[in-house]
Image (tube, rainbow, N blue to C red; front, side, top):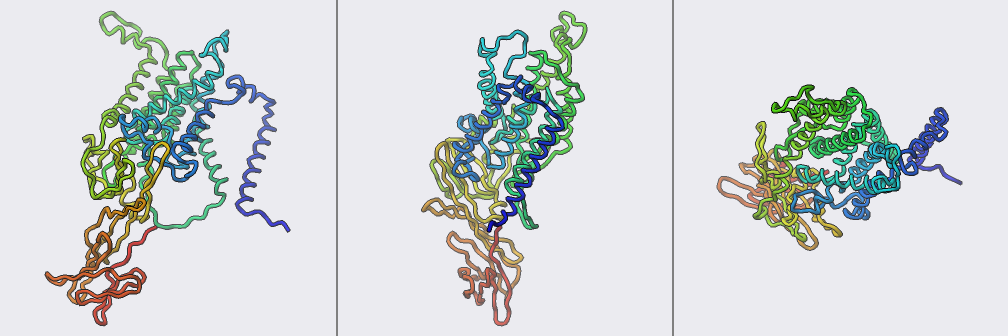
Length: 554
């Protein structure tokens, strides 16, 4: 007897049938009779955006074969493939095409498939000038235009975003924003619709991957979502795309959309993609969001782009005299806007140059790090951030001279210094792995935090690093004293490199004992201590007081 499919399979079938039915109904109502295909074939080789597919395939290949995603889909190597500095060319070359994880990768691939075809359609595989012979030279050859020019241009924009992004960026989103900037110049409303379509495709992917989702309230650890947005890299990508789009439109004399369409398109895109999320890192795990200022910048950018796109080629001023700035006065109006966009791009990209020309400070790391083929991994708290603090900048009451706490990774040859795992995240999870590596190899260091919370008196803990047969205690927190006083005695929990101890003090006298195991009893300083399921009780005659509990993790 045949059984019914699982519920998840039924939901997937229902979703697939709904999509198929929708497509059939639309085709039947619209009755394109090949018009769609003919229109695409007039711009694309065989009606296919080959440059987009090659680009997406290349980005996927980097994730699978360079970052090790083929064998570790959910745990790629990321640290060596970030743009750390100009002295580490491998990171600069790979940063724009590598990704932090599958969700990051899928998001950028979907954005590419939604936006890049608009760019490729605008460029066209066939030259648009009348009378052009398509196969007489490389610039007019459709195969060269589709299979070479588009991918090479994408590589160039990717390297540009990596070279001029502040901080160790990773991801293809800068190029995706360049696709959007180019498309907004030519088809602003279509670009906004494509953005909505990409969001729909991502939702569709998640629905097929996980048809039903059960969730409940519970504790979680997360930094502000906007603190994970590479806003500066996105901005320079968008501006680069806009400038390329303006250049092509002017060079070919393309028809241009109205100022209203461009301004609305750019503004809607900027708001939807959080280009307004301008923030500052204050150190530790604190960030400051300048929402109002960021939104004002998006509106001004939309206005500037619209003015540049629709401006005429007439001189800036109708009358230009010799010796009175005539060259400037005769500058075409659209070039004034383009110059302003170039200056904006330079102002945003410029700060990356001094940052990327520096390397982390020399000197010993706190504690004894674990070393893995040039990588040093350790744990420290409230130490100067070796990446952010390398350039001294102060603005609006904020400064780059900030401290950090967590798992630190350094590689002097690659110019790497990063807080790989913030202290707060490790306190939440208790255990994590830091993945290091390079082209063709990967390895990991296990990081474990274990601690005890003194009742009313804070928490003490130790952090241990494990790599193969090596085990290092990287950090021990100060003792934590419990608030209750039992028979005139104070009780503290003390972290050691090998074990936790209970310290009982009376005046200037003290006695210590290891923390007892579960259901065990120990004595020190006239008190008995019993461990009941990870809770420590101090016993004095008939008095029993809880003084500590084992730290728990999610």
